[in-house]
Length: 148
Image (cartoon, rainbow, N blue to C red; front, side, top):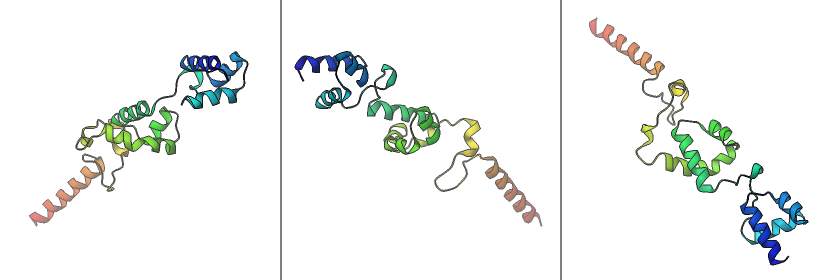
């Protein structure tokens, strides 16, 4: 492979061309294009449609912003077109960015999702209708017992 060949591939890669497109325009095959890209530390080709693939920090940042909006793992995975198991590669790092220590309670959660949010200890969220109803029933029993 000549130096000009490599330069052309690197220029096309920067322009957002896919490996097959580069190979066709240069009259070569995809394996040679991949070898040049790998040699230059660019083993992955841009995503289809000419868009480049997100870097790790861009992906983690996007996941963190979706976590701050109150989305769960499945919703985040669907919006980013990932499987939930693949999302696991970035979720812990994104949580650390989205919720620095002591700021977990400041997350705004849509009212429609309030009833369905799980807690690690299994307790209901403060203000949950079931918890409030149980509290009032307990107070009514205590009031009835104290009057007797």
